[in-house]
Amino acid sequence: YVPLRLVGEALGCQVEWDPYLGGAAVTSPGAAYDAGELYWLSRIICAESGAESMSGQIAVGNVILNRVRSSSFPNTVEGVIFDRKDAVQFEPVSNGRVYLPPASQSVEAAKRALDGENVVGSALYFYAPALSQGMWINANRPYQQTIGCHRFYR
Image 1 (tube, rainbow, N blue to C red):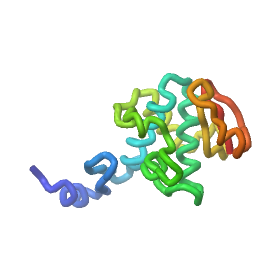
Image 2 (spheres, one colour):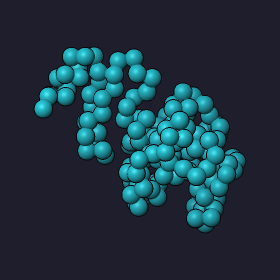
Image 3 (cartoon, helix red, strand yellow):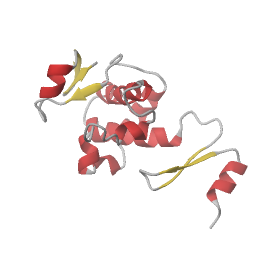
Image 4 (cartoon, helix red, strand yellow):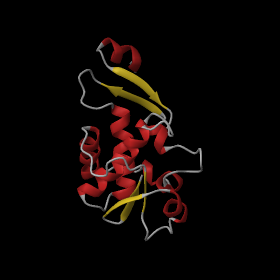
């Protein structure tokens, strides 16, 4: 065994405890992405839209990142995904699919969203009409667009 934090920080890495993962997230110096952000963003993208096109997967990532930037939501990717302020925000958190390993296409979508690729502008919400009636969102948020099976709202 080696003390991960001591060794990681000595090598210039950022070491953080991830309470949702139940383990350490290590980001090496000069890494293009924060390890925890990429980890959780790729998992929620896969769980919510893994069967969608690349644009559909990037769109889900955009919503998560738009929420991170909004003062109305937590300011981290993990915080947004596991937010329970107004009940569970994402079904995969309830059913456990968010904990499954992401497909490579979902990791690529997460990287593209983190790099700034945006296909839904300022959208903060989405839902799949085939899985939900969307009564609250249709009555309270302005519709923006549909990509694949998801409708996106501001």
